[in-house]
Image 1: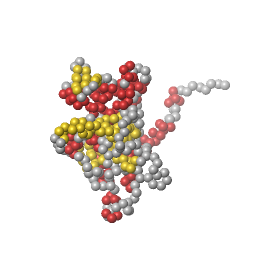
Image 2: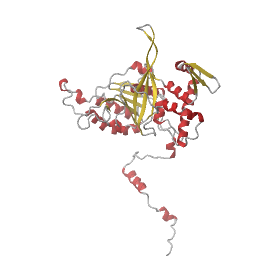
Image 3: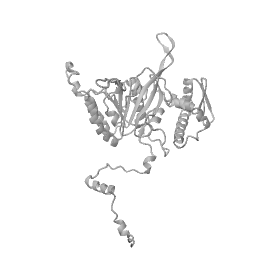
Image 4: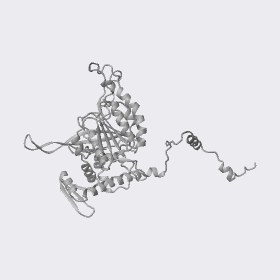
Length: 420
């Protein structure tokens, strides 16, 4: 049997196009000036996704602060151009976390649009957290009466490319149909699930707008008792989120916050005219229920909120630094050796924090060394678990406790798992 003759260069050039190449050629002619096609190359995976720092090293680390195989942090913060859903019981720190992100955006010269359907935002508290509430070029606050009016503001802000848009809260928005009813008709003629249906129609369209404009939209949802009737009533989880299921489906990052305990400290009592023990901070557990930007789904950790002052990020950094032997702790004393050889030694957590703040360069060095250590350990864990330092294995339980992997002391709050 004779061999087939080899193909000439001309015949090779006439090789049929692949099906995808043919499809692209047709679409280029039909959809002129269309920008739907996404060009992907190797460098795409070697850069962090555009993001906004949250102001909490713990939250940043959980969302996307663990290096991928290229040694890049996928998304250490709230992603730009995407939807983020924060949910939890009351007083779990949802608004505080959002205001802290607003302050981070302002520090970078970015813009924030805050839509307050609850009409309860404390502007003095926001200002104390670093939010420029009196600068209309960096921060604007809207308190619309209806859901539809707020959505118009949201749509316009997203089209304009506002860096951060906060919705507080998704379940407090009241549809026009409800507002226009007479008082004696309230609750009688309203369609059940009306607000949820509006969100379900609106969010898919919003996603396309934010993906192009780069706006980060954060929706706050509170947990509510689930009203169960009919077959299966009383089974499963007893809580559900406000505003229906749409935010679960269309958000790229979904975060649950839960207060797990209070901490007491010495405060001055005007009534008793003396120093007394009173609640000064809350310990908050944060859990990543959904993340399409990094492999962090299901991860959880704890951080602290000082009442009236906001997130105590330095406390979290010090706890992690102690676990990794960057800071030495003995009794009530804390010791940190700087790169220049200077030793900082303070008594008590507050005393040590004050010392770090007063020493030039100490705070920045502690943050950098601690976060670099976290990244190093995370990167090593992707390759092998046999090359850790000997002293790391001895403290694995302590590290797990700080990062929220161990047993967590329960409070009397409802479980924030909503049955997803």
